[in-house]
Image (tube, rainbow, N blue to C red; front, side, top):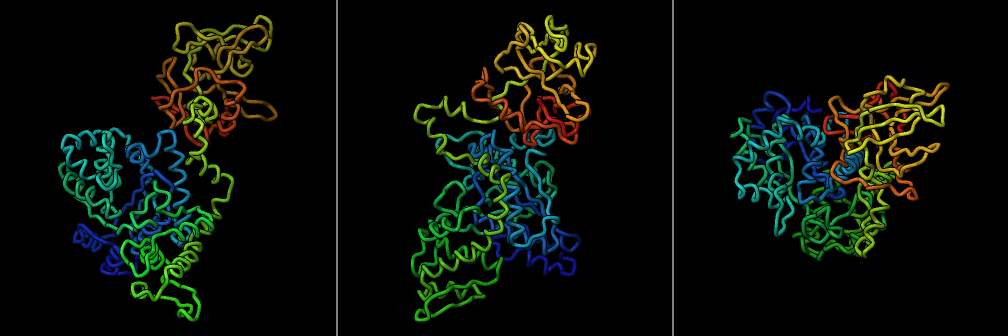
Length: 528
């Protein structure tokens, strides 16, 4: 892509339909020497909606122009923006965004192999990036930080410090992604100018900035993920699309702040190249437009009725959404959608004084009290030849007694003084007269001969250190799991060992503050 185009032709593709470009001369210089490197970032907050087709169409332009394009799933930004995405849901929302945006790109014919996808926390938690955040915070004033985020970060009466960090992190992303330009909506202009002002102060190059216009929502204001009535979700049913378009603001002859007309301009024409309406012959009959200006002119002169405009948009929009809906019919993606965006109505019981019931029904791994332990002693069970009693230090005043048959797979000597991983909030259970006060977590593979290995904490771990699932590190575990709820049994089915021998829950790593929980050799094993 882009090999046969001149630098001027590439620049035309890169900048067409944009509202503003900062640093165009720099882009021209780069194109004279090599392909442009550009990134687009999206904070993984509310569900992506149909206005996301606007940046998708520009990404298609960038690829046609030969650009190297990176898409950033800004999970940390989603949390910093007044906690629009709870910490526990960040990873799930990244997965949802990745699946739905890839489905959008496929629906408009964009080749995914030409794109690079990256998650913010893959690099934003590094030592170097963190030090640059501190360096930047020593230069940027509170006034500048607040001003930069005014149109992007949620504005509240008593803003959190996190919202002030947001613009600086977005500026640093340009350096750490090693791009020439950042692409976004014109609402990000103040963040872009903050980046241009402060990155050189850190010794980094000033980047160019490419800005799309903002598409009005169905209510006439900005289309927003957090305002249900202002947008059409990518997975909305055809009935929902019809219902929302029917309610949309579309005053006869009014071409200002008209979300339906803007959608024709910024989404349908760039992607499809034409727009058709069907109507009774006495009102002009069916017509296909190949030029948006003609649509706008005829609507302004009331030659196109709002109902006909909405009907035409409905047909064209459903053609774009059908492949996305079809992809999300799979059970895995339906489950992902429901878990990344839980139904708020299911939490209404909490608002009526039943918060305890709601919490007890929540199926999240942070409710498990998993810790690092150290085996102090291993003794034979007095009344069972196949069982042993392990005394294990879990960071409490007294060691816990664990009854297990692990010695059938790992020698008594190998267990002595070994660091292990335990589940500590199951109800204690008597096993042949001796109470087992925790469960040793092990990997296992069934076969002609069953193989079992204890899970290993990272080197340097200490007894009592908490083990958490990546993305669920901030929530507190239950004091004791209610055995009637079978929470452990429901969560355990998603515990596996990866192909790299890392313990995982639903493909997210089990970790301590020092690193990953692993096993020696049992790739693909179950964990129990």
